[in-house]
Length: 290
Picture 1 (cartoon, rainbow, N blue to C red):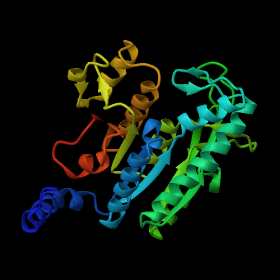
Picture 2: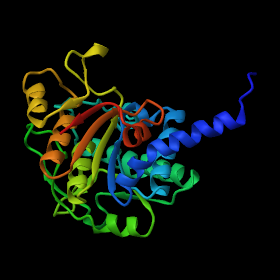
Picture 3: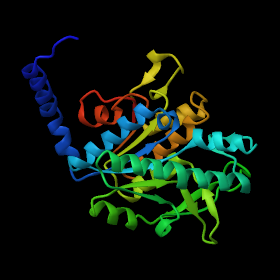
Picture 4: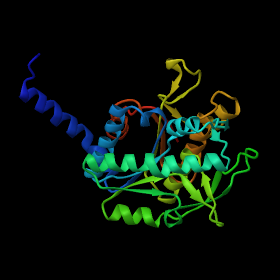
């Protein structure tokens, strides 16, 4: 085993911290909404990496809000009970039986697993669904035809979030919304996270997914776009350059930026400590929408 000189290692660490200081100062006291989903939620090492990033953010004075999906776990559970997964424009077609499974996985297993990991890594966390304190009020989404109990958020009531943040907790939110009649709705997690970022006047909105960002010629790595305007993002959607699950992600970034969130980012949640690289380094990662 090669020997590490303690002084050199210590100096490198100190230099890294000093380089991060301006970014820590910029975001201290600010709210950052992070949407966490895709295959980044499956790999155990990556899950630990993400949780530690969030804990560090909280310790240095940033207020992270974690909104999570759970698509792969939902797919697995639906497969076990013999229900086929169908998507329209990146949104899961949700009949009554599917809705039961979605709510069970998101508000139960996935949400509480994340809360447990954050607490274990040293940050108190509280799990919520959009039903809690009427956080997300929704109506049936008919923009993409009849896709069942898929919700479109009509109102966000973020008081429960601000209360938890003020008390020192990291809120962990699953994207089950409730209608005015009490009906549960499955809301696309990207869309819900964007709506929450807008309601909280977040400083930054980050979408963690399982691709490195937005490509002009997917999957050519040289075509990764580091920055987009909202008009350029709309053109990518309209021209078909991006499709499937990337559509709601870009739409979520567009909505957030146009409604007052200064920065929106799509980054690869599979890359170790991608949150910290984005927040605390000059180069950043992924694609920024401005």
